[in-house]
Amino acid sequence: MSAIIKGTVLNYFKKPIPGATVTVQNSYPEIETTTDQNGLFEIEISGKQTLIFKHENTKQELAQGVNENMTEPLTINMMSELETQTPTASTSESCKRKGLFSVLVFTAGFLAGVALSSGKEKAVVAKI
Image 1 (tube, rainbow, N blue to C red):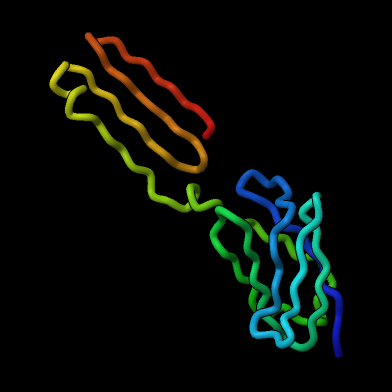
Image 2 (cartoon, rainbow, N blue to C red):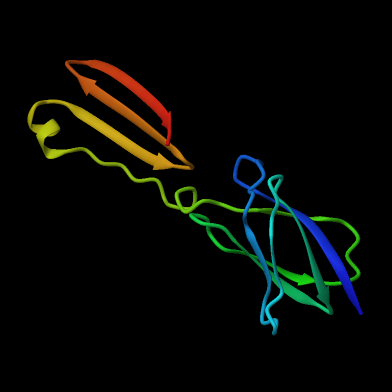
């Protein structure tokens, strides 16, 4: 027995991801669809399946145990590669020699910076 599975693919900020690929794992011939401009998809499955969700610059997501008895739409939240990285900090050697101190942290699509110079502190946060 087969069924149409419906769902939505969203990003970290709960915004739709258009153009994400949804594939039934190990299907032959391959069963695949793409999300529309609202992040919505429909795909036909039979039995118990694993769906693979892919989009450029995002971490691949899996939905395991999807079956024809599911009545509620799926919601898949995809993380960008940047959002899945561990925050990092750095201070340049030239800044240290000049008595300046700066820290840059990259995480969840944001760049946060703190610069200290002559006892004055400036903080900057920017979406990247």
